[in-house]
Amino acid sequence: MSTSRVRKEVDDALMAFVDRQRPGLLSISPDLAPLMAALDVLLAGGKRLRPAFCYWGWRAAGGTQPREAVVAAAASLELLQASALIHDDVMDSSDTRRGQPSVHRRFQAMAREEGWAGGPAGPFGEGTAILLGDLCLSWSGEMFEWSGLDEDARLRGREVYDLMRTEVMCGQYLDLLEGVRGSGTVDAALRVVEYKSAKYTIERPLHLGAALAGGAPGVVAALREYGRPLGIAFQLRDDVLGVFGDPAQTGKPAGDDLREGKRTVLIAQTLERAGAEGAATVERLLGDPGLDAAGVAEVRSIIEGTGGLAACEAMIEQYADRAAAALAAAPIDGEARAALEELAVAATARQA
Image (cartoon, rainbow, N blue to C red; front, top):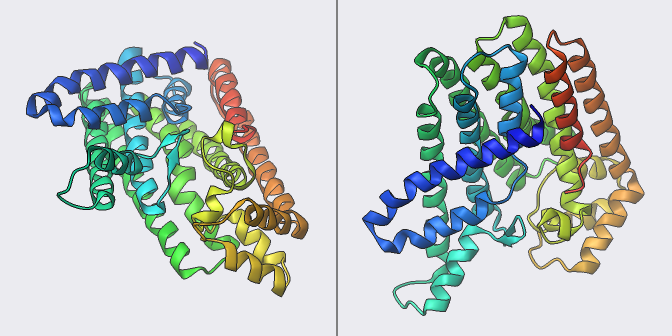
């Protein structure tokens, strides 16, 4: 079963679930239609990496449950991801997501266009986004529970699912903490990477799939040995794209991570190598919401000139190599191995 077919089945399961939920919301009030429309737009994008890793973790661990149920359980991770993205955009004051207005900006614009006089548009947009994110979080659990898996499989998976949700929220807090504390160290940035993204994107979805299958401890351990370094490489690549990526491909304005003041490993590597003047320039421009193209270019120049970019690229290669070695040694069948090799390339060599 190809990774593209898995993605198609995940899409179908996800949209079917949302469509089943739609009448219930609209029966409460037709005013909820814009909420569903915003969710439809958000869910239309994305690479579906988390469900793919979950599915192939299940296959690698020798799962025998009905495939449709496993795909539905895996697809629920896209609702968890939607929740995280919506909330993250509010916390970062991001204007766009996947080439579209972020949810809170979408509802702020709606309030202004409608000319509502009951209150300012800003808090309305942010409050609505928080609620939609909460709804997606609730629905992720509901979709998992009603996926069609038997109770034993759900019980095994629920433990991993709960841990994953806890970890990503703790990672988000650590990200906020680093943003305000500004320690600027590589170790601190890597701790955020591990808990906000690496575990949540690859290691835990693999772990979830293997748990659903009732996989042997050796297989579970091997998948986690592959998933953790690959997850770190994935986020380091994302950090590079956040500064150097093409907006047409990333769906975010050029240098948006700089405007948001993200204390990434890329920035930490740069600050460790920059002289006093270069570091002061980066610190002055990082987190400036009005940073223009010239400012972005100046920070990019410092990142490249100090060797910060080269150091981050070397880290990506090192972590990807560790993942490849772990996968090569994993006691799994050839089809699952080939799919996980393909997903590793998609996660680390991407341009968007």
